[in-house]
Image (tube, rainbow, N blue to C red; front, side):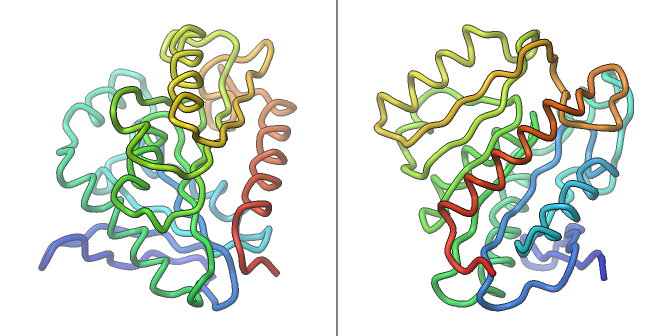
Length: 226
């Protein structure tokens, strides 16, 4: 049954951690990082769906319970978040899940937009991670060469937050760092195309294709799948 648990990310400090179903041995795992809206229903539903495909999944709350629905509110939430605290929550969520899987079971990180950056960063601190999946989010600079895990990226055709030249720069940096890389661009889509709650942007065919590609990518790179 779905539940929230208290995730201790620093001594005496806790964040919420969403667990779609109990993590069991012999299963691959995925940590899902939310976009700048916060840990909203779209993310919970995505985590549930991924768990239904046989993965042990967790989704940490990076904003202390704050959930926004407007761009202005989401921007404020992201700007107000303490990066040191968020980073500690990210790593604690990875560690929490890894500790509950059988030795050798692979763990991937997956993030939407704001959360995508953290899924790129996390393997630089946890080299045991096996894969990164990003939905319309990038990072450039030394962090790219500081990790080696494969990267799958889903990007929109028209996206003022992640324009084509930025995506191309991200892909080039990954390949120059000898990172295994799969980058997909979805024609006719914009930012948030994979989030059903964003009626102004959601594109069901593109979202379904991205999810299918994500499953194939994770199953190919993680051990312990049923």
